[in-house]
Amino acid sequence: MRIRITFAKTEAMRFTSHLDLHRAWERAFRRAGLPLAYTQGFSPHPRLNLASALPLGFTGDQEIIDAWLEHELSIPEIQSTLSAALPPGLKISTIQPVDLRAPTLQTELYASEFRITFLEPLPDLANRCATLLYASQLPHQWRDKPYDLRPRILGLEMLPPDEDDRPRLLARLSARQGATGRPEEVIAALGAVPEKARVHRTRLIFQPAQAPA
Image (cartoon, rainbow, N blue to C red; front, side, top):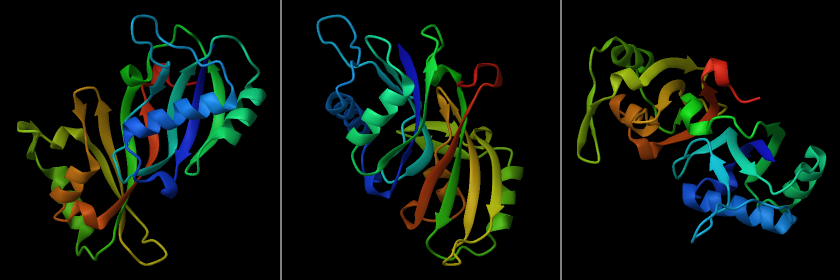
């Protein structure tokens, strides 16, 4: 049985790494007594597949993970037992069954949307966004490899300030394999300091023909 879980990673888990998040889900399945399937071979691994890594310090409310179980169970049973076993900072929104033959999440992921809140004033943010969007190229470097950031920015949209009157921005960035847009690089390109911003992923966007059920 294959299930797809939509969940929130909240403030209590903000400084949990991708690897530790994976381990947290594995422990939750064990505590819940659910028959999580494992890979075959010399070193079996739990069959858990997170759609996209969420960097340290980021939160998200539409995160997705696929899990494989050894046998069929009812969705209400899975949701009630698993929700009770989750650590603070993880909250399940929905669980749905998925065809065992469906493609992996990563191969169908197209883009991600992030809400960026700047903790310090950033004058002329709208103009800065326009400058990025109208640029023909935005040369950057990631781990000593040069690349063009511009095609990875699919959209930038101003949002109303938050309750503390801090400027906010919605960024839609490419999430294709080998061409992922990183919010921290967009923040830096806008002339702000990434450490002086809060990033919350609001949505994962999949290929239209193969969107998760």
